[in-house]
Image (cartoon, rainbow over all chains, first blue to last red; front, side, top):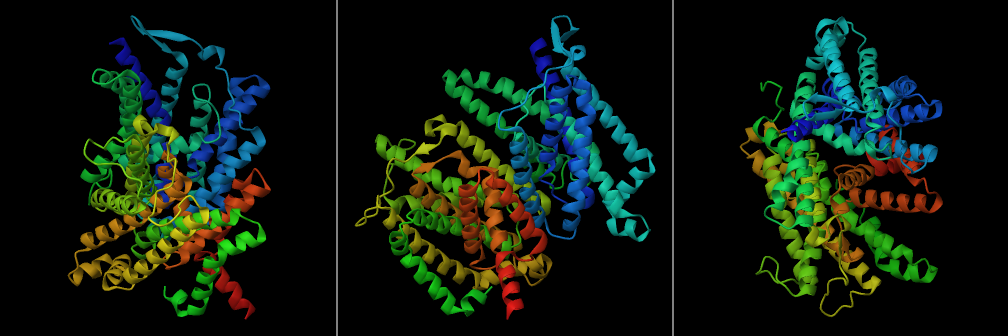
Length: 304
Length: 327
């Protein structure tokens, strides 16, 4: 039972990380209609910038503003230099241009930091475990990630539903032309949304640092999963992205934890492990295929 | 789309150049040219197949590497069962005959395309892009986990498939076989594109409602196009497995789907020979940049960005514009 709860928490933690990425992606997707493959690169930039500053200064906490700033600046730069020209183009051009951006960023990072993965140690404050229930110890750092993710979710909810900017964002995702016709500077709004999405991606990248290796290619791995989240949740829906992230995080972690064990009962050990790992990697895609076949626009978009 | 055929002189000179290529490679001592050309032809087939749904049909598939990989794995798996002498699933004997493996690869990838297409075509737009990607990723992870067939190390094919009367261990022979198949493929594709069926596909891209209004079942036509396209990619995958004597999950990776798309867009979407030109440009660029600098991806990325942002319609359009300006 404690093992099960621990896996559930791991699932929530992974889901929250996905949400930080998916929130930005779904806004960019839903409001601007741009498929941004480079979102994973921004995640990588945040991870590298934060980890590098943390390693140079010796302070984990200084890494946070560095990661956020680097990610937001590169996000705004991407929007200003490249993505801005792609709004009127079809999805194909967007995929190609942002695919090019991935190559550029990966290679630039390799030139700057080399191929060796970077590591960052956890701050003393968040190191160690805490006993949540009798017998259930859980790392504080992962709990902190969950807390940050939930805080961001609440913050985004308030931003989207209670502020003027949020109102414009919602209006923009329903009817772009109408918002423009009402005299709103839609370009500025787009840049803001893009920057915000990049900021969250950078945050996710830096927080992933102490758990995963900071290396070139880390962005693409999580990018595809994030797209799955966005599509399952429904393009443009923050609420959808939140629930889809959690569902996906838990399903993915659960499959990885339990499937090899189940298969081992009917197969030999190493083969069961390999097949289990393979099928659990397929799990989220299968889930997405099923969701799309039943609700072609995603779980949280009303079919009209 | 018929521009390339309106200039038969150009087409004929390109074909002659391709036939003479091994001689040129021998004469100049630049033997790598031939394997480069073989790869261009094979990727040309795959990109042209993708272009059939993407350019003509307007269905942006981000998962065509799946069919490419399936084609490769059909060749690899049949070869493995042939060399071990044990039948596949207990009743299908393995084989190393090109005349069997290639049609088998085409049929299997066609069947997979039928299944994936039937499900994916129920969605549209961004969702279609993502669901095709999802299916390709599923197959990618399936092959990664199949330890019997090499898992993520891939499957080595010790010898290229045999073709009666030809020595397939000779690189030059392999090149000519690929060239002949490519020529045949483009003739068939040209016939399809200019048939009534091809016109319906183009019509569906322009307006599905209009096609439905004149009484055509859109879904069935699109599915058929998707299957044809999958079969073409399967053919390319089977040839690639023979050329590299290797099939690996990398053939199904999503970046491969991305590369195929890049080739299509580089060459010009919705043109018959555009994807072949795009494949040539992509592979030559990749090879050249890689020989100059370790950081070739940076250059490739910048070129891609330039092509998308500043040329409309790929290299062909760029050439036409430069040519037009000069004239």
